[in-house]
Image 1 (cartoon, one colour):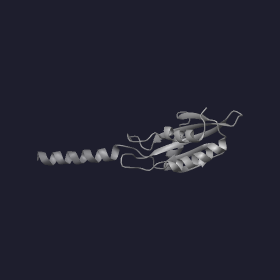
Image 2 (tube, helix red, strand yellow; image 1 turned 180 degrees about the vertical axis):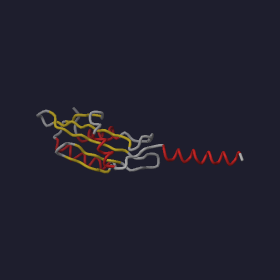
Image 3 (tube, one colour; image 1 turned 30 degrees about the vertical axis):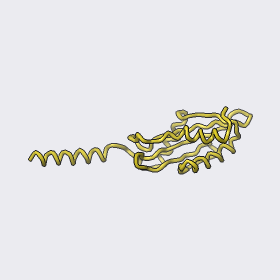
Image 4 (cartoon, helix red, strand yellow; image 1 turned 90 degrees about the vertical axis):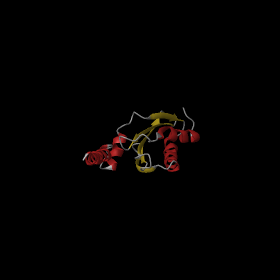
Length: 141
């Protein structure tokens, strides 16, 4: 009798743990929009390079890092990328904001990196990786 009760309790606990650990948005585009709303909370670096050159380099860098570009708008100055789920990660959402600064042809780049799900301890922080690649191509201010 005790064994049945114990096994029933373990099955119930396992079901609750598997179903309630993380919430993932129903619409992946909504998650990407949520990442865009995080503007101002990312890592910002200024580069001594024209906007168009930085924008073109960003697309190549995203591909080089294995990030999937999920959307972009050059006129508004943002690029959205994501990673898929892996063994220890449920994926990440990345928003990169690019804007012209001053009249000397300099560009400001902000990278916001968020986990796709709340419980994702193995998520990477993509901001340093993206800025490192940009820093290899352009001089930082």
